[in-house]
Image (cartoon, rainbow over all chains, first blue to last red; front, side, top):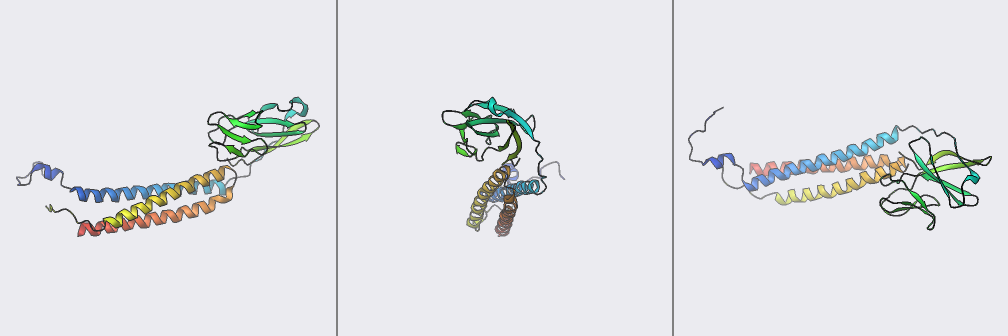
Length: 170
Length: 78
């Protein structure tokens, strides 16, 4: 290795920037193609991760939990409760005299809390104006792509009992 | 030192391959998001087709990358 530049007729700038513009474009395109291919590999890893999670996922066990007395809520009224853990807020709605539905209160878009809009008879996420059907939790409008997970209810001795979550893949 | 600019041979092929990779990546991004949404909605059966198609797309991208690499080497050698 030489510490000093040997005398040469080539100007210094040509020695230091010795790659032609056209040649440099080829190098950049090859590097860019490599970057795109690595991105593709990253997405394959993501898909493989989802597959592994799906393949090795154990069926969750849901507790039976009394969440409210049947006559505790007025028609069109709601009650907020937590199910299956204290960190999973849910909303119970009495839609008619003898009809109750309960859903996870976390919006499937970005987990904001949904609330019941009585006039329109739908669940609304105020963050990004996502609307869900009160009948089955399906998306009516807005950015959410998935229906709200539903809490399966059982009525026993005047009590509403949550027995499991439906449509909850997380 | 060779001061002649390299020939432009193969540039069209490289551009075509890059465009194809870009299209494949868009499809793969859509596939990943759709598989994730499906999994989170509780439809775990979509995960296997998702990973298979994603692997096929990655293999195609890898093939195109090797094609670009080879063309580029050929052009450099002249």
